[in-house]
Image (cartoon, rainbow, N blue to C red; front, side, top):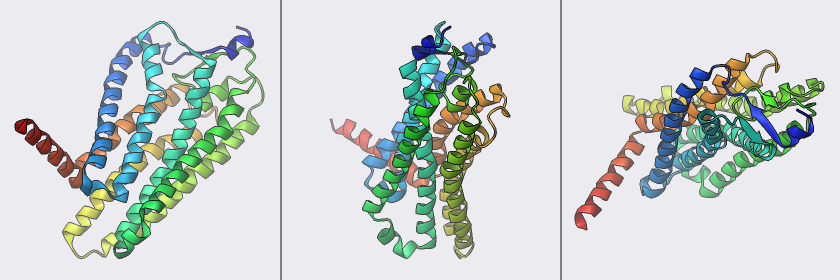
Length: 313
């Protein structure tokens, strides 16, 4: 293939070295994707329709669910299309859009999880001033910062990655147009590029993660001072859900982006990307629903209200 052909399309090798695995993966990916859609849409609807959930915590949770929907949809439909047929290609424009969304949404989620940690810190460590500190305008500003950081990350890294010379190397050893996979097929020295990726990863990944750890250090001290056992249990349940999500998301991101490009095996990279691109967004609604009495109560109220309306008509 000529270099010009790479301006028109890329070949996503996905799991083509394991054809039997691809058929099994198609079924599992489809099921997980549908569960992800239903779970996150349900969280958004419940948080918006139930007045008792019109609080900063559920405002941020709604944004997280919407972000996860977009994050998963940016690549999984393309993966299903490639797994279900013989066509392994993706257009150059499609690849650029996929990379742009992947970087933007991933960066936004890093910051949004830090914002959610700050919200829990304020609620537990400064409960009397919570409504004054977390007023609606500030909540919108914090969410805007998260989306803005993601957008900036995409605007900086996507064009640079797509413009790397590839000398006719169009076979991407991945199931999506992810930055490390695209950098690996460049035909020029990418040390400077990888250094830039590392520095940006430190800013976008480690800075929010540090803020999360600091917030939860203060939260842990505050929870230990709570006299009521029921109060401690409620605080641990709420914060435990968020910490579980943080661990799943950041663990994979750090492994993928915070090490030299050639150190991680390609198979590990594919499966880890599939995990945080599909499994983590699917687990988020489950984690927050099963561990949260408010959400379960809101679901019951909505179901009973729906049944009451059907009986009325």
